[in-house]
Length: 167
Image (cartoon, rainbow, N blue to C red; front, side, top):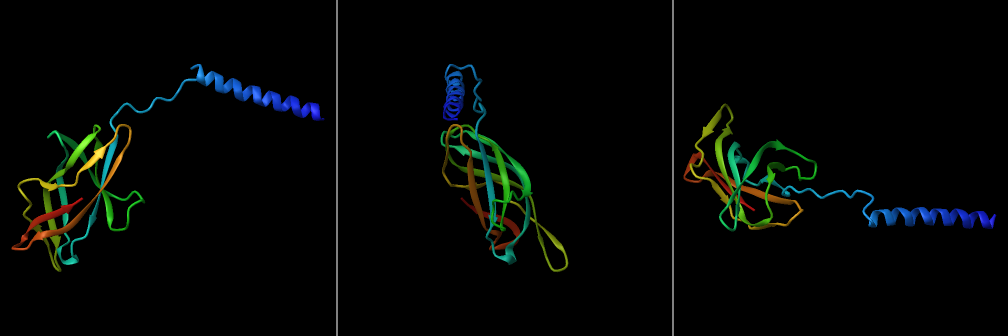
């Protein structure tokens, strides 16, 4: 019985060492890491007062690199992935090259505010809204940014959408 246990242990050890040796000598193909740039996702959290909450649609978003280059981000229909708090939604995503970024810029297409008896269209900014929040994208890793919408109506003109975004 003891001899059978030693033989079985020896066979198991030989198989383990043989598999490890095959991997070291390159006989077992290795999985190559993704050669594409890493992903970035931006979660939006609306912290504006309830009286200032609006529905809006962005038309374009870019991640701004330290060297001035702009990397286009995809606008996604607001959706929940299950990892955000109830007030957060996924908002932007994209593939960005590694580097140092100064923040993101978002252009808006439309905005509306629901009143007690009607929906009001709001004027949107004519220039992109900046989120000055530096971040670094490292090779082979993804980045998650959280952006907060602090207010959305212009104090001097309630018919104008004026987002204050902070990263």
